[in-house]
Length: 317
Ligand code: CP
Image 1 (spheres, rainbow, N blue to C red):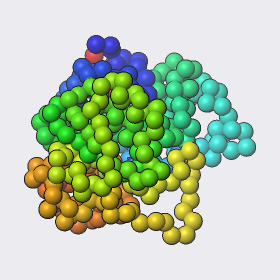
Image 2: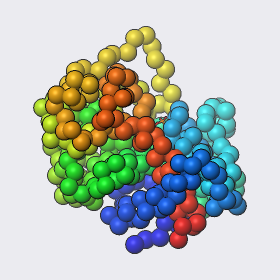
Image 3: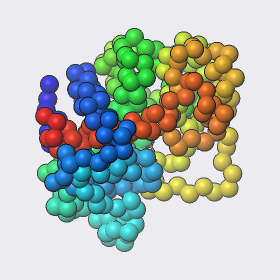
């Protein structure tokens, strides 16, 4: 197995099966720190730089919280417009990371351009973690989700997935890549115009993923052990910010997970994931049903980022 020390976390396409299990093992080891709301000194000599060119609540703050739980420091920006990277100067990725690498020991970057963290990794001498790039990938979110499945179901292999929402979403691409390493058939349910891009489905096929498509979640939910949902009402992820202009559309019934649907059709022990934020695709009355696991997923978001930071910074070799 390749070492995580000094490694960039850019895509799950290059993650091997045993590397998933290694990072889950580290996460499980560190989880009590977060659960007991303790801070440790595991990374007390280290600093995380957050470079967020797009809005985020969870990804940025979960990384920051993870670093603080491990005793490290945090610096960075959450709005590139306040820096030379985002204003009149539009400083290049290369020039920006050639500065940021002196301000810390690891960089987590979210960017509206596909491949921007990969470009940063070409120039930085410290690890780059992809916190979401355009319509590309969101590897740390799907590592969080896979870890949540392992913790909640006790296994990953042998579970059948249904993924509902906009298949242009970066989480869906990382999910497909991740599941190629496991025995997990998946059905994607997406509205017209939001189907899985061909380059990703070609990759999944070439890696032997057992996947298919459906038009209505109600037709396939009965078989699912894991139901993963993303909104179908989305901003344009190729923009740094996409402000709402007037009313937004509601989610069509085909892509909504209601309490009635779960009670009447879902397996009794299926689990429901959503990386959040949500629109109306999961109504709030689902929150207290036994299927919902998105708050556990949110907690695990901190645990997984602790595991990744500790691993790429060499604290868990
Ligand atoms: N799930 C997720 O990536 O949330 P944020 O956009 O708030 O980081």
